[in-house]
Length: 314
Image (cartoon, rainbow, N blue to C red):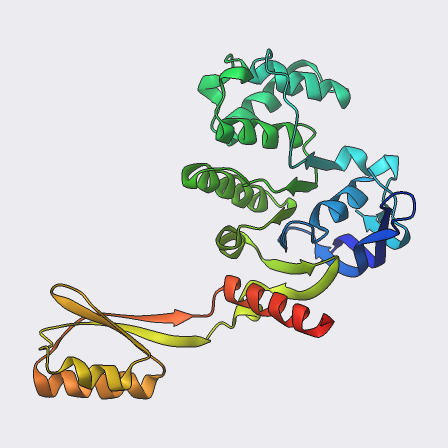
């Protein structure tokens, strides 16, 4: 696979002002992003996610270390036509319609004519805004603005798409729409590099993720590998027809028991406990309503890595 984004020992420092020292935003960051994958960078606010993206787009120069995009050093003008970028807080010319907005940005890439008209049609369809093509952006919702922003980042048909917090501030419907767009971009063979602190969305769509904390890379790898493809932490069992005197039997085996109106939920620590519950259900006449394995989530891995980092620096 072709390496599209690469950093080696990347360090970024900012001066805090006269006599206040310097802040390290990126600390020895080394990573690679391969062609055609969706790569997510996770981290709390202030972890260095946006700084890393600004370095990759050439908006700021690193203090030390190296970075390459599409095989060229960052800032190389020859690769700018191959990159699409949506910042975390984009500015929109609200008096423009969706179509006018895309045509305005297309002129930055010297695109025009029938080819541009076709591209605008394709992008409006991709982001679900064909019916709003002549609507001014001042009438767009937050989710619609985010989608037209993504369309703007794709106007030059880039090989690499950089999205800074593309789901921030969106409701569940808006987040789903952006997720679907990112998956469509992957299906088209594009490489998507995006930052986020919304872990469930990252877990759903990313091929690989990197976890940043205070500018340092804490973990990196495929989501399945980090989470554990067969890592069952516990099993949640729902049972009906358990009498009030029999609840204590379940409680002795379970990590947690929640008694509902007509059934109970028991969280069991291992498969041996599940086997025993099923045996008892047969003996006592309990009815098995549902059984759900609970696997480790990306959120658990993230919190574990962050907790480990805080422990190490104490």
